[in-house]
Length: 391
Image (cartoon, rainbow, N blue to C red):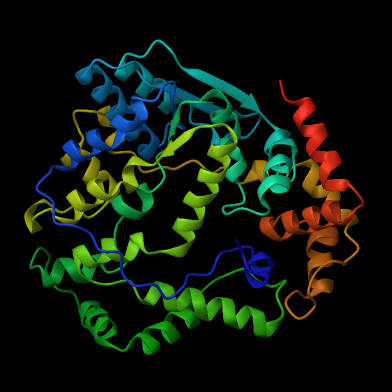
């Protein structure tokens, strides 16, 4: 799934893909989202991955509304709470949404070290499927277990389809929806410049922490990511076609599909449903939004609590990835099983042993996996142990 360079960098590299066509639509986003959640509602149990953030709250609210309208069983929100992790605590927002929706069934699971990037939950996924993207894909395993044989609905895609464009200021000026500012002339010049020129500018401005990569590998990663960022179209519809063609997004969806098959679970992401995306891409200029909050307020205000549609904060779930298992592995790593042409071994050893900094997660996962799979009968024994440990 990930190339050696991507494993070393800890990030998938976008590919030069054609734009994914987005059909013209006469559906409202509200109607399209309702249609998008129905297949999952009809495959019970329907579990919603619910963090309390804007995106998961939107899909939960849409699913509840559709279930009541069509006489189907209500979806079950399932929330994972990380012990002693303030950055990921959204309890107040979760309770607000559940009360607003009038739900009586809500599953909450408290976890901790299990979420480590080479912890108990990750090990089974790594041994069955190899290193997946994103490195926290295993966070969904407890939800998939509860949804076994049914469906799991996520809020994945909200950042991409409801978030602002990188060209938002220029787009508003060109649509005569905002007064031009002096910097808009520079933005227009950038939009008209050849892709290679925009990519070089983006590469110079990139602030990426890739100090563990060899210089040539680092330059290749930065150049590829910069080219992808610079290729974002200015136009409203073409941007949606560009978003749907992004390789990192497709890799993430493929990872969850693989994990879903392990539990016979249908995994659906309504915010990336083609009909829903088409409804957004087909909005007239006067109805287009400039931010996620504006989209929620304009299109889905009646589904959600008012406080949530104006929310500006976002939880962070990275700390659980670097638990005791990862710290111990990183501290004991002897510098083997990496390509020295890609990884500056001494720099990575210093990062992990001396500076005790976390990440890159996918690289650590690949090192852990290569050590287990290369051991005689290691893969079979570990998988057998994990299966027996499961309830």
